[in-house]
Image (tube, rainbow, N blue to C red; front, side, top):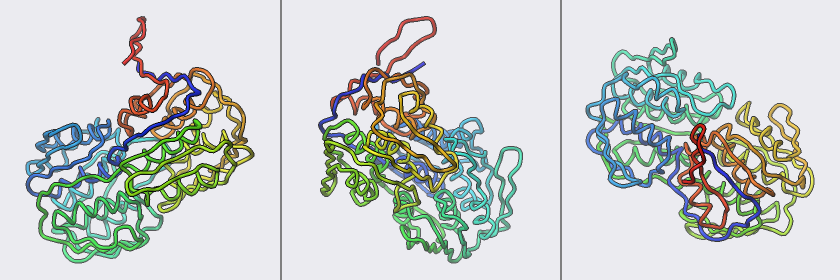
Length: 428
């Protein structure tokens, strides 16, 4: 078993460089299914979810070659439609992007229903609605999404009943090679949707409006391979911004797009932290005392749901009572019981957490119950008194590149240990 061990109480000082965005990397990698010839994708984060996506593509028949730690060359000319391996695909939420890409290229798809972090019910009804609007017949049976069209997909108007990042991406992928024009109304606006559209446009697609709530896709006959770099990960950046404030330190977070971080910056400033923005970095200085605030997570450009757990830790350290409302997922607060082990005073009602701050956090044995919850208990361990031992760290490594090494370089007393059965621990 691998665990992260943290001796808390050290302020963080220095510079952390942010990796490429996980939430961009997966749709772009699966988007290469639409492309003829070689694609070179740069600034990929070397994380478990990216390696899993590349493994799935390789199993489907793609030629995959790592050029360096963050750059891959992919050719999907020889992939076999419907061949995504079940045991690999079910463990990754982003694997459902194969459906939109296959449907666009082959006129049919068969993809295992995806997994990922458990935030409660995450239906794919908006994905299905979009595929059907484009002319596909869709069935979900025996753990698979099966869809097929009679001939080429046809452009259509698609209205999203709820703002859905995944459905917006899947409809974009499905519409790129369709005949005619597809319009997505009430589309998600997240930066990784813009990143995917920019990649596809570089390949020859005709997509306009990404980053707004109306996206127009004019179908094209084919896409060609390009070299493309993934944007920086705004959630990783936000995580380290909160770590600086939580530990009483000062961090420069480099390789970022400050515009993507505005909602996090606004809340940190409201709590008393100082945030300086530059062209490609932000500098976060912790205040003497953090102030309680109210936060509601919302689709972009609102406060990100993927920053909910990390922000909750910071609210635990603030003076006063804060309210944290979850505006996206039904089951985001499963991590609260882990923070309670460390002394946090949090009461949870459906989609609302009341956080009573200034209750001292103490080191404890906790688990990473999902990816962002894992980042939260890391931050809590950095801020707590004593030693924190974190299990199930595979969740963290799905989305954060070298988090232990990055934090150690800025002053954290943190290490990863491999603990074999019935043997002593070995430090990595």
